Amino acid sequence: MVRLDLLIPGLSAKTDHFLFGICTLVLLRDGRRNILFDAGAYRVRGALIAALKSRGLTPDDIEAVYMSHLHWDHVENVDLFRNADIYVSRVEYDYTAAIAPSDWGTPPFVREILDGLRLVLLDEHEQEIFPGMRTISLPGHSAGLQGLVVDTEHGKAVLAADALWSARDIVAGKPDLAFFNFEQGAASLTRLLKAGDIFYPGHDRPFRLDNGRIAYLAQNTYRLRMAFQPDGDDLECTLSTAAGA
Amino acid sequence: MHAFDRGGGVTMTGEITPLFTGCPASADGFWVGASTVALYRADGRTILFDTGPYAYRPLLLGRLKRLGLTPADIDTVVLSHLHWDTATNADLFRSAAIVVHARELAYAEKPAAHDWATPPYMARALTKLRLEPVNEECEIAAGVRIVELPGHTPGSIGLLVGRELLAGDAVAGARDAARGRAELWFADGAQADASLARALGLADIIYAGHDRAFRVGPPVAYLGDYALRIRLFVDPVGMDQEICIKAETARSFATWPE
Image (cartoon, rainbow over the protein chains, first blue to last red):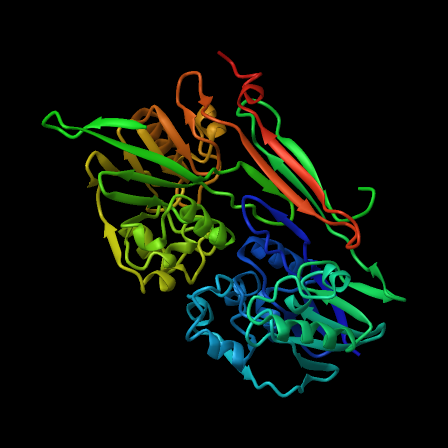
């Protein structure tokens, strides 16, 4: 059994000033190794280090980082993990040699980010990379997106990253953001929903499906402070996914 | 519209257009990094000041497009400093001269251990571009000067257009200007305070790194309002919640001392 620890829940929010890009980051522990699922956007770099620290860990203690795909908001902090094997889909990695001009999600300098790290390129065939952790190929959102199906004491958890951007993809019956290939993305969405019992979307809270109803397992709340008054108090507001907050 | 004299009595006109108005926001679980990005256009020149965090990328392209511009139309990009939230999209501007202080570039190759804001891969990402490092203050277009404002980082620079200054984080916001203290610095606090004082002396109008543009005064006075709209959902079946955070110029200065 793998212990699954949500370090940073994905945030289902958008603004008119910037992209949040706060994606789900999970620590997986099989009793022998510390494995990180996705590395997150630069914005959460401090929060990620703090989340590891609160579990008695530093980035140096991470033995493996599993990269679902190479979009900016998943890869910007991967350079922190100098001691880790970095698992990346070969299709995804090869794609970064010639990124489509319309694809603004994959940084053209992603190979500079990965420079000096120990890469392990994964083929498309699905495999158990560690006991209780199987890769699942979910292309569409990006060229070679791969999720992970993990055996936990609560059932099979599907770490879907942006193949399931949020629970709204299920409500809509189609992927919200399949900007590499829509048909592939739609097929991946259908497939991942059959692959387990608990779902970790890329940019939403983890949930179970109770007779088709979405039951969230976590919420996130952030406090924002705006120093709008040079000589006065900050304006504070709360950003929360919890009902009634 | 700004008018200035190019010596010899020829008056040029140029215009600063903010593409992103910086926001003095902080949060408890992530870095906001809502920095100022601005365009300066005059006499056939199109200069971009800072490029923002990656989180600006599609919006930056959209805002340029709305002005009838593509990245290829930018002839010069000035990077105030090499932080994650100011210099990340420079790679979009492959045909532009990328102006950065030589000291900043050298520093970014090996950022200090405590410096959480300079991505360790920033310098590597920039080497593919047409870099034009500067070692001293200089004019990069008629009446447009690079000024050295170190302290926030080792090689922070600003762009002085007449008496208007694109300051980067040497002037993070009006609060720092009012207090005469640069609150957030990574290289040298005393130097950052000195650069802030110099910036306030050089300009009448400052485009701050993380705030709205303001008139130096006294009294300091913002030039415009700011609003941030956030949408999120609690229930995936329900409607989005919408939050609008507004800073209105008049209200912001309700308690401003004369």
